Length: 391
Picture 1 (cartoon, helix red, strand yellow):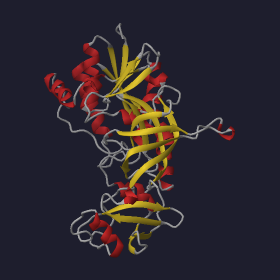
Picture 2 (cartoon, one colour):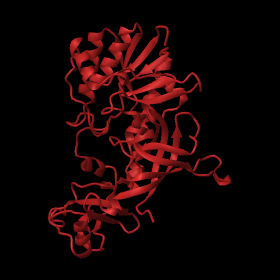
Picture 3 (tube, one colour):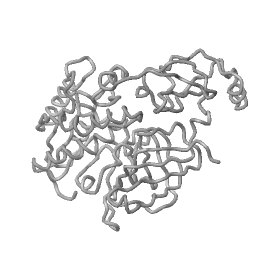
Picture 4 (cartoon, helix red, strand yellow):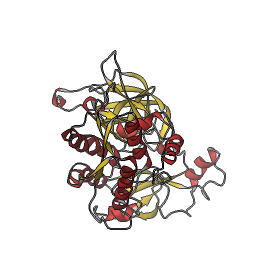
């Protein structure tokens, strides 16, 4: 931006959004802070930190000398994000509500509110960047410069209208520099630890929370031979690749399973080799588990995704790209193929297929497959199915 303008910053109470507001004010922009309240249920519980976060955000605004407004988006959140979250878990998939929250709340409800305040741009403390490509005229979503903090994966559903109005100042910095700036200017939350978990769950036990909203039907846990080795509490409470909380830690592998593990060089296989969730058989309410991190059932050379969303507003050309099937994984080289649109699907694109150069671990339906062309995040879709066999 060549001129100074009014920028509305989403102040979360964390250090990243605080430094975002500081940097914009330093550049000469008129900065207004907005604290978004997205969750109201059990707001006074020990796990919900929104009240503490607002106090921190207000303290930051005071130090920076900017206005702050408390805005309640809880109704929008419950309708557009949480209801989808519950639906997906009930269907046995593992959704990513942070991605939906960005697309539906932070860059829709919040953006609309900011525009009503006369803002020219909004800004958040995400580690990503936006670049205006003067050749194509498109706004591109780029990875944050700190590879350990890059959050473009969570932002891949943003469209041109949203990207054109968005600034990510800390995306140009490393986290250590953000902390240094916060301390240097005396921000009260300079040493506040990064938040973890989903905004409405906080640090509470996940299974306890899910239990309040999703019906559970216990059933058998089986190993690859079909042997029942335990009992699950309800398929919705497990995700592919899960290792903890299965309650079957001491059971040994036998026969063919034992030989397969030992053939892969796992010493003491069966005795100490951990179990992992490998498949969820919804029709038969059965949880299938395997021993060993690299069991064939956990490795996928290919996936199909639906509900696609592209930052440019149109599908990329087929070809070689890189992809992430979960946050915090290295980009995996792959071949991208858009699936053809039939007459029956004119109004809804059927999705795409990714073929990976190397098998991907624990590809999980409901999670997002996000496509990259170098540092440019192109968009992606929701994983619907996957293959565990190259033959």
